[in-house]
Amino acid sequence: MDGPLKNLLVVDLTRVLVGPYCTMILSDLGARVIKVEAPEIGDDSRKFGPFIKDYSAYFMSLNRGKESIALNLKNADDKKIFDKILSKADILVENFKPGTLEKWGYGWKDISKKHPKLIYASASGFGQTGPLKELPAYDMVVQGMGGLMSVTGQPNSEPTRVGTSIGDITAGLFTAIGINAALYDRQKTGKGMYIDVSMLDCQIAILENAIARYLAKNEIPKPMGSRHPSIAPFEAFKTKDSYIIIAAGNDKLFEKLCNLLKMPEINSNEKFSDNSSRSKNVNELKVILEKKLSERKTSEWVKDMEKEKIPCGPIHNIKEAVENPQIESRNMIVKAYHKVIGDFKLAGNPIKMSSYKDEKTRGDIPDLDEHREKILKEFN
Image 1: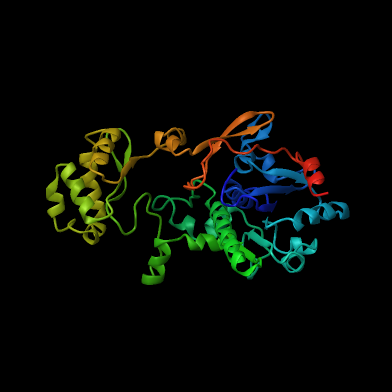
Image 2: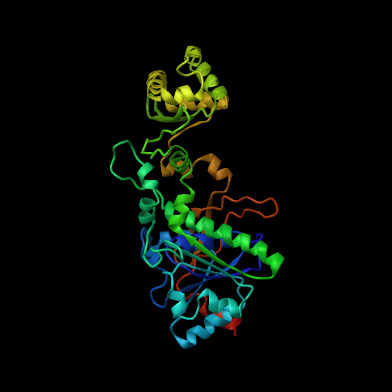
């Protein structure tokens, strides 16, 4: 891939999701990624379903465009190979349990002495410091501990996980952001740095309105379904055949909504005349709106509201989401190639840059240790 990170070498010591997601972003931005995997086993996610011809679609969706070499970092000969690769690297990304790489001689203090320009990023469940640093963590653990599950779901429902692995993905995103900031800093100082990202920290960082409400008002937010805690109307409403999302985020949009619904009297009602009043009377407002919205189908309401530029939309399933013409026009479903499966469709890169073409294909998906001979020859 061509991109702003072209000619940078990333050594990828990660597995499963948080690390591979980060290095996939770097790859999509043009970096060369050499994925170092455990011999015979490889990345744990090679065993995760769903499978196509015995190959993991989960693994393929996160590791396109990378090269794979299997090395045992406890083995002296393999360590020599790894050292030669590392000597040419710009970035090292790892998501081992804190302290693991130190035992093998590849902790930040050791490596930074040999490679002072290297950017070394660690993503872990709880970070490299603090009383929980040595504990393992998976996505749902930090969703729970980070407060996200306490505000997800319907009122009085059982604890509900967010429908995607946002604990891993946010950590992958923040790690990629940190790496790019460190690259800019290196341009000025000539020095690399260490980046420590905690999955739990990332969950706190994205609590948004919930953390603001608690820190400002000492209120502990609870699940509210699809409803926004401080804007109304801003949720899913029943229609004749399904649901519609309406996000009238200010008074002007609410006025436009009332006019479209041919209910201007709602806007003039003091209970609904401004956002603060609507938020206090949100349940009553929802009953009124749904009575009107139930007269027509979602698609009909969406068409009319889009004409008036009222923020709205249907609730798509995954098939409908990926087949949306808008998604196709933005090149958000791309292809990568696997030598057994052939072309494999996966999510594209949402970062569009004027100086680089957003290709419809990505680099090939690597089998375990597939690039060993190529890498050994290149790095002597």
